[in-house]
Length: 259
Image (tube, rainbow, N blue to C red):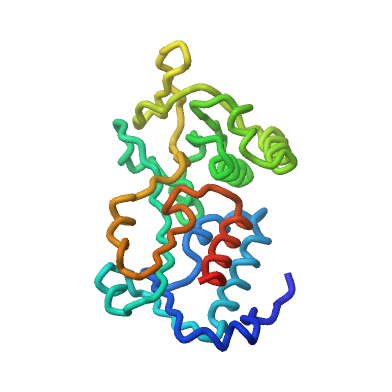
């Protein structure tokens, strides 16, 4: 991807911008996109993230504060006219025995923990994130089983057909085994214990379990920001707004442009 010039607001809109500020708890920009670029086949996304960060850093009328948590107190002291909340969500962690074991990993941290993940892996969650994680691990020489409580056809119906068909084909080529309609109920040192649709308990032997079971919203945290500005807008994962990267970016762009 060629380096693009920084995007700028149209002149007639720049004149109306008095001050915008961006509070970021972590010491870097990019959020959860950093958790999605570890696989070699995500190179385009990695390039996009780099471009997006450079563009943000060069955007006029934007005061950027990294390593600054956007607490209600901090926001209130800024006296904003408009508050756009994009605080994201937390990984959904099942309350099952063994979930805190040393052999259990979250899909978003797979790249950082690759050396700790064993040779035989069960990936729980066959959506796009779990499937891409399973593909990456298989390409790294792991023997992978991908499981989900739903039927694969039900999961795949949520995604663009060409994307999911290509991904399923690659998983097949890499020898990833897929188990449908099984629920993860326990993790032991011997492997993942699942319950099938007949309520039969089955042990899937493995060294490591990687979970990709979606994200959990925090409505009580979101409620803390209500009333801190004349206009408060929440976008993205913090309100459970699912979609692809294009939809997420568009939501943020138009929220800023229209307010």
